[in-house]
Length: 442
Image (cartoon, rainbow, N blue to C red; front, side, top):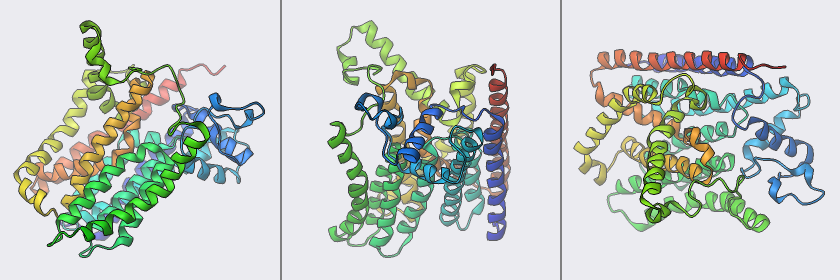
């Protein structure tokens, strides 16, 4: 369906207004501190603002350094540094006004990621802007997206980086000639995203597959052409992220210091399933599969740590499959049919979609890894996967395009699917408001 560019951006603006409305309602109607570990994230900002030093996990604090203690100090500092700078123009961090103002900074980061995805989708489907709008709306209306970006939580910074990284990769893949500068910017955005939140590492396999896809389009496929993409991507990752990890190793003798010790799901590693008693291994394996295939997907879509009190897993899972499965199956069938073309010489659009697939899988594995390190996160592990929501949005929109090839049918389908997602978002906010309103404040 042909949509004028002006109408496209006007519709994107309306989608953005809905996103901002949902996030703002979440910010002003709920308690100032209400999200997962939100007070601990605020403490990180406080240390940066007041001490002008990086915080330290409580188990590493030395005598006389108590002011540097922060429960979330294992995270990289970029997101918190942005909030600390913004806080200088605000009253003390303990005031609800300042806490809500910092939530708006996160909300603006989410808006930036949403706008970058809209631009990326427009460039991917210039002849079918309806599909681009579907990708944009499916991200904006995803409850977990606007919930996590309306909190003091570094997922907002990671989601901003995710949208920008996909846009940078789309531009790099679309060039007729390999331009190292384009690939440098893609690598830089990913590196900065990982300095927002290390779970942005889901973008690393996206970079790898994107480089492979672009190299496959070269007639001669020389190694020099491959190297012209690899080194600009690797340089910022090695310098920025590698420098951060090296600093951790030098200061704490750990590359990634763990906040919580003693809550590992399987302390000796997942392979210990093979050596357990049959009954124990069966129980642990079933629980792990349940987390991987049920809890993680559901808490990717919604803040299921709250909603699990209002609906059963299987009712929520049925709704999730009704929304996502048709598009994903259509995309898979199309991929199998065109596998020769995809593997031999993928187009820029095909290359980016191919790159998104291992990225989403990597985010899934990262969420499972979080559970393995702290079984408590199994209740809401999907929030460690929500960073990959921009890639999920592109894949879902591409699948809907294949599922409903007729433009008018696709328009109706998009209205039904996205209308249902928006209705879920409204219900989620209403439930969260009732949930917190029922908590005594005295």
